[in-house]
Length: 128
Image 1 (tube, rainbow, N blue to C red):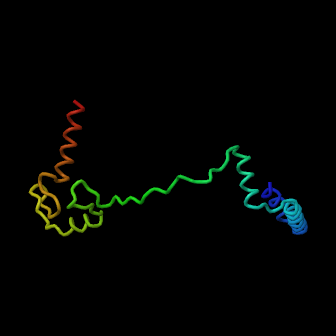
Image 2: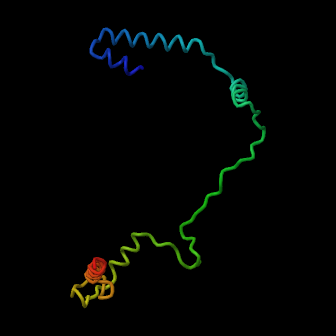
């Protein structure tokens, strides 16, 4: 509602000023009617609202901190990050693929061109 009124009066500065003054007056009237309550009063208000008495001793504690990185099944190994895996792969010597005659990190058993041909052959067999 506030933004609707603000949109209506944004072109007329006199009305916008009157609107702002009216809002300040309303805030002052609403603030004068409230009194600050003590901690005991707030506690009673909450207890009345929930209809339950607050216990004197709280038995809930935060969970213990759990560290999962490095907790593999074997104690000697640890989890390797993606960055470390990429560095290790980059440092491996290049192999020459017998199928495509390229130097890379693959050979004829896992060549992408062979896999693509196998896919095409599989699609061709399905059509028949």
